[in-house]
Length: 550
Image (cartoon, rainbow, N blue to C red; front, top):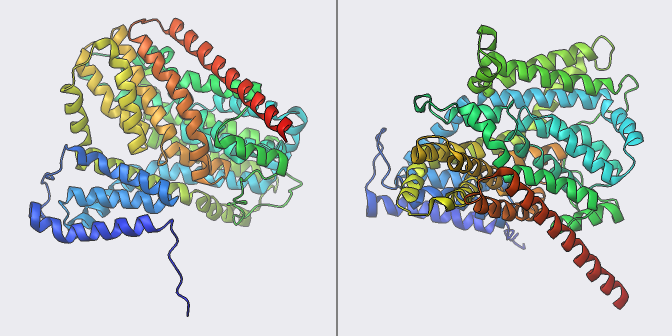
């Protein structure tokens, strides 16, 4: 009988697994000595080893295209490093880390399930198809569909996860009708998630940034966030990039291939087929109306804002600014999601848009819809924790920066690069600016023009790396909302994100010397748009030459 060979895509994982097992059997006795005691510090703490687990996860993800197993391998590698290669203690540590992350981030898991249930009810109500028909009458062109997706994403600034899922589920039927690839939709969604939230004062991101500036410094974290917005070149240029590409009706890199497949062959999935076909989808529901989509979304936005204000003490006398500065997104968003879910039920059940039995099915389907995202999120959180907390990546980066001497005018550019690299490696923007913002405050001790630009650079770099990383949480959410293959989204978005990152880096390099937000931003927009127009003209001439030759 012919033996089945192992697929090449899995071979790197198998080789890596063998290496880890061999290391766990040999290294503890040769190098470190085994220690199962809690409360100890790894011999690899605050060394370059602390950055190796995410690198392992990233490389495996690229080679195998298997995100779950690659992330798990990265977490396991980090746990082994933390345990000085003692296998049993590493397993115990990994279980504790994952359990801790589930507990600490349980509110977000609840919120995702609530969103999944709301989305499942919307699908069952038939309002998605009705809205698509209504929107198709208003949106006549591909350009209009892309621009509408962008501007809709600008409205959902409360939280990036909510932004991704809401924008995706509303606009997916519209972009499908205009033969826009799911990869292009995912890029649009991703660009109006983190890049929007990082420049929106009323958002969970503003609260997260503010919380990283300690009260004892005497610096108003919320006001620093607001003042940093004009200098956040990556976020602002990303929005400009989206609009410019839509107006020029132009794509490049891998995205061009998938857009051509969608336009010429009608294949919006890029050759993968509908990966979400196994999820129950409703037949046309005659009771569904456009309002069945619009009202739940409006209520969700309002209830999430109210939930954030509630956790920040607004109803106990705190001001709006103080409430958003002190809010807890992991509590406020689930509260908002619960109210929105209850509202949707009350909107649908009396009119028999859905039946009680169908609502029960929506709970299962909604949870099922979010399982892939939740799995990757949990592994991403665990990977970030094992690097930052257990292996001391924070201390390593701080020491590296402290021992490096730079002209202070170059510091914004350096911090932008550092933020990009750390966020790319860990897949989390929040964890990255949580590391770098305290460093900036410690370096300057006060807020002036240069320190404000440096803080903006850390925020912009955090979002840049998050946008490029194959283990990014928002990338996971965007691909889920667009219902497209995750790695297809990562690989098509990467050239676009890198393109904007180049101009953002130049912007921060200039900003260190010309500390004027308006002047630098204007220069960068003119440069970027001019280059895009130049690339389009070059590719058009090249295409014409090929056609004439044929």
